[in-house]
Image (cartoon, rainbow, N blue to C red):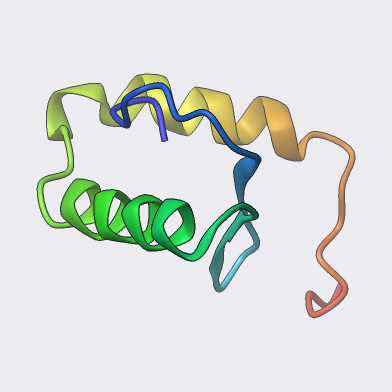
Length: 71
């Protein structure tokens, strides 16, 4: 998400243990542009940022248990 340009409509992303989730609202053209940019970003991930992004995901997931996980 951090590689996407600033977009002027509601959008967000989250991730679980097994799936990423992307949401957007707006006109058909705005949602299509968002999904196109997400796909482009996913096809060219900035691997040099892997450690930093892992830290972000870890911080966001602290204290949250995925309902599909087993103890």
